[in-house]
Amino acid sequence: MTLRRAPPACPAPPAHLHEPLVTPETVAAAPELAILALLDHALDVTRLALLAAQPSLVGEPPPWRVTAELRAATRVLRAALALERAADAYRRTVLAALRDEPSDDTDVPF
Image 1 (spheres, rainbow, N blue to C red):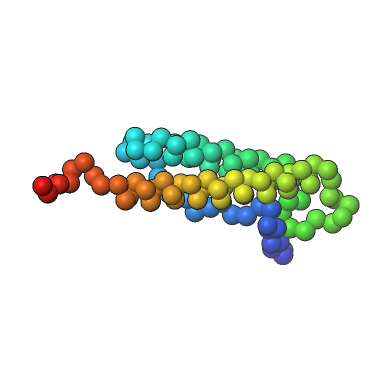
Image 2 (spheres, rainbow, N blue to C red; image 1 turned 45 degrees about the vertical axis):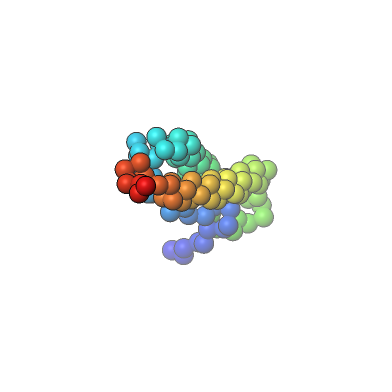
């Protein structure tokens, strides 16, 4: 059995999908992180469903197997990857801003 390499259209899920970034504290401070978590999940399920429906997405299909549906699925996966990257960059920016904000618990010298 030979292992086939996945094409760029169906990369591994980003590492953030397995990090617990959504907590009551983070959602209270930045509610958009909850929506980004839902988006991550939706994109992951989309990727899995398309790979199940179009197994030819994995590996290099022979030309006779390249259908309009396969090309459309490839475009969706590429767009999903771009959206994942943009959402991840936004998430990192928001989390960095949260880390940089002073806490209300700090003593302010007068």
